[in-house]
Image 1 (cartoon, helix red, strand yellow):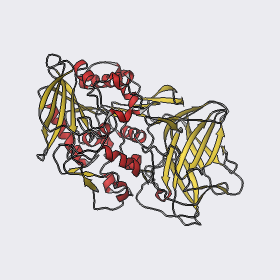
Image 2 (cartoon, helix red, strand yellow):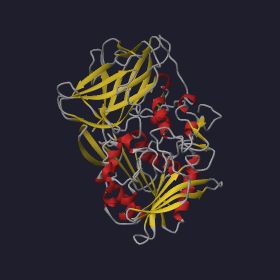
Image 3 (spheres, rainbow, N blue to C red):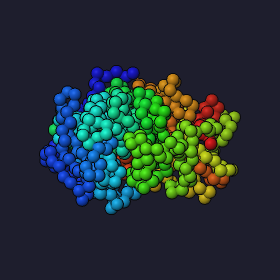
Image 4 (spheres, rainbow, N blue to C red):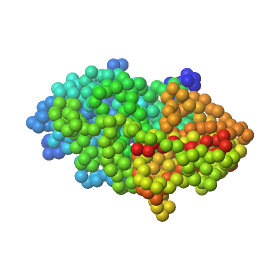
Length: 556
């Protein structure tokens, strides 16, 4: 493993909780108070101090049903640096398919509605500001860290002992509220009974900070502008990808052994969550040792699916089954449910027993005429080239299906690459669907835009080294532990991981593989992999002869 003596950092001075930058909402004064909400049906207890094993106090807001409705309830823990008071305003998420008018004003970013869940469903909420965030004590705020795991353990056990608690604790909501579960659950707190992981990155280096080894600093800077509030220092994820460019002990400390988690888990993600939650939700789900685990991959958007009636009902069924021991539909759920997409708004849900589902791994070879073919080329080697520093320079290869074809699961692209003017290149790969008229069919990208291809892949060529023990032909696994620079005369082989997908092509529709050096999505969309120009000049992709550049795709 690449060596480092820094398991934390770099840090930056936190922003005072009441001196935040717009549009973030400042924290109210730290004061323990109790209010009645929702016509007296919900008790809101503000700024409850929870003491950690080292004496540090974290502050939580507690929402629970009034005693006349339910004296003791299961509790759901919600943990993130986004501010238990609702620091992230709803106005930032107007175009994400969520009907906020149907949610109470206390329904904050990526969280369930306490009015619904407390007064009608009879659960209590424990919303926590983690160590050194907002008013919570501590000197350093770290994210996805072992310290968060230990603190989470203490919060779970504290919640279980409260007079309004049955002792049955669940953890999880959307994004960070799911991601924070891994470190705590791997420690097996006795009263943590179930996890609901709705879009949960589980390896932040490979899935968001340095996807394919490419540092995505603009997104991290955006993320840090939503976080980093407190009275001490905050781990700076806008700088950390540059300070730790390889997968070292720092990044490893943020990835748990998923097999240590053996409690019931519902994992949900969307094919749209590219360079965000898709890969990590699936990888963690595969690694869990729980005998009760379910995976749903939908065709919609991150937040809208969570707040739709069907999404809320699925959450309720899950929590009721494992925290209230109710017999319901959970016992009949398919282990895996996958939405197979035809377009952004048309899909069919299929049931499976595992992920990926059984498939026929099919090889499509890149050919000089711009086509994909099922047999390796018998002609001499040749190449196609793109200019790595230009967003408008792309090479593409097509295959038109003569019958309906479904591709579901992991895919990979093997390419033989020559960098003629720079010792490295960022490879951006798109697996695209073209209709019978040759127009690209685009899909949802995260929560706002219909702009994504069927799948995407990324690789910084110098990071091409594989972990042979964890790689498979359709899912290469890169070590990201050393750089392998290339000379102008070198033609090197690289395997690009394409993120999981599920898409149907009709007869007469075309599958296209496109490669460039700058990416395929809206350049103003900072949630996607964005980095300063890392390479320059012509990059050649070779095929034919000794160079079997090829796509490996799972046909179901």
